Length: 176
Ligand code: ZN
Image 1 (cartoon, rainbow, N blue to C red):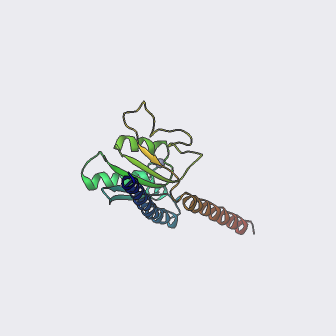
Image 2 (cartoon, rainbow, N blue to C red):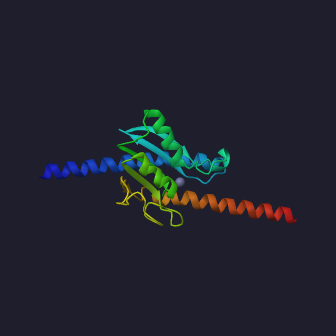
Image 3 (spheres, helix red, strand yellow):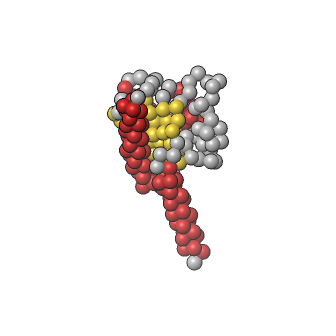
């Protein structure tokens, strides 16, 4: 019994450290978005321990309202494995997915979703609504929240604070 318990604990710890490792990579993706002036959200899609897709917000650059981090990571993953269904895969994303991306997770048959920060304004995986756990739909996604949550949330608030400061500086310059 003790061995079994220890085994379970060890496997839980391994899952946790893998989640942190992958969330760090999702944060690296988010930083790429910030460099382009896009809202810093990043995603990494993993199947059998291997990264099959990555993505970061590119709405402005691509002139595409659907170019969210999750959307791009999932498209890349489906192309990589040659299948429109992504069974047994895990998506790591720095911010709780919106209703569009939550719907996409269900359509993709992704097994597990790991979230950094929650999004009280538009999150559709538990905050505003909960699309991925809705029993009326034909697929539910297992969810883990709060992995590097504070760091992910800080990255967003730093970005918006910087953007507000830049706007203020620009306004001051124009009125001079
Ligand atoms: Zn989205």
